[in-house]
Image (cartoon, rainbow, N blue to C red):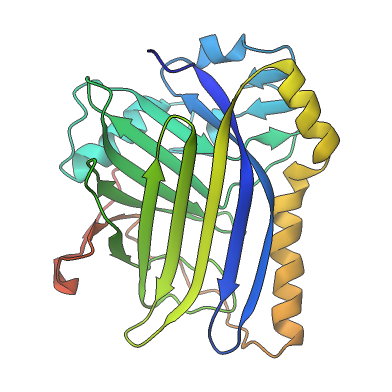
Length: 271
């Protein structure tokens, strides 16, 4: 059965800070999954959803990937996978991200899910964004038996965490549900864990209207939640760190958790 050109995903995200003190929070989220080769088809699924132009819910290709009209989403993603030694052989690439709502949106993480010609999931790009307009990609080969993958942390995502340690990514995926856990690890402890669990729903006008009634400011909500929680951390005495210069390396290969730490490889992003 062919997957739809686009679909919606609804669920929750949970965050827990474990060092130097514990703080947890969760909130509802709504995400969009889109086949990057079928943007025109996706654009026609609902009068309330658009690709490349404004609407109640919209997907703007310039928000992800190369962020350039000169490079297609497919060309950018294929280059990332190829640089990591992963061949999709023309298989579908589906992007799970936070769309714009009423013209605004911010996606802390976007998942590029690369499939082989048989439809099997072969790889993922975890495209992490910070609120300073920077991005870094962690690329991982996957198979049905894949466990967690680890990669050296390379992007400043919070003024309350150094750019040190590692991330552990654990992705679980089915037609009906997607679950992702990202742990922030140091040599001696886990400092933070973020997770999302979402379930799929058909992209159609009734679902979009229900979304907007339940979460009318969800586009602003992600950014608001980030800053609201930052305020709580600051008031509790969490140490504040100035943002360093972004590293030249913009892509990192994530290895299976069983691999030794020195096997983790940085990949230079293609121009």
